[in-house]
Image 1 (cartoon, rainbow, N blue to C red):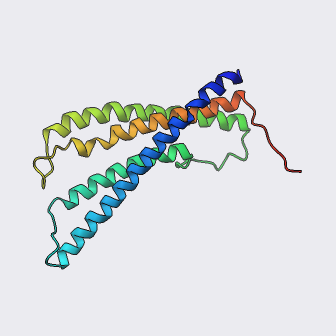
Image 2: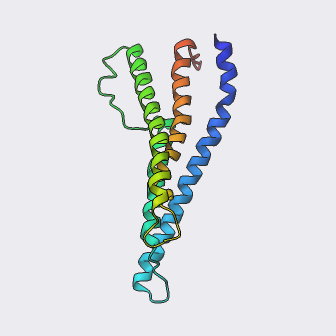
Length: 177
């Protein structure tokens, strides 16, 4: 059985690349957010710096992307909110089963985010535009939800795989002499 895990483990670099892409996107969005907010605030007090009308909507849209994408990143690092108060009292197999159950639930949520989020982005988003930017579709305001759903599916599959692998493959413990 471990041979199949060795084969599947070769996909890990693809998960690393996906993580780095999402992380880079979050960093880029944060930089854009900071620059636009700085320009907007400075523009209110310094006459030669413009205070564009679109700044608030763009900043809020960037924040929406960062919020949901960073939540997807937390899945891979196992840094999401979870209840661990009873973990020391429960057997390790029960904890593993509960982890798998919660991962399946999060995977289900990710699928809902993709399907419903895409419908909202296409249907509602295409019917409107940003108030301050009438040429830009509201699609971009709803698009973070299915995009984060895709990232969540990718990272949840990896987490589920690691949990299942831990059932069949016992990690070797190295002791220093």
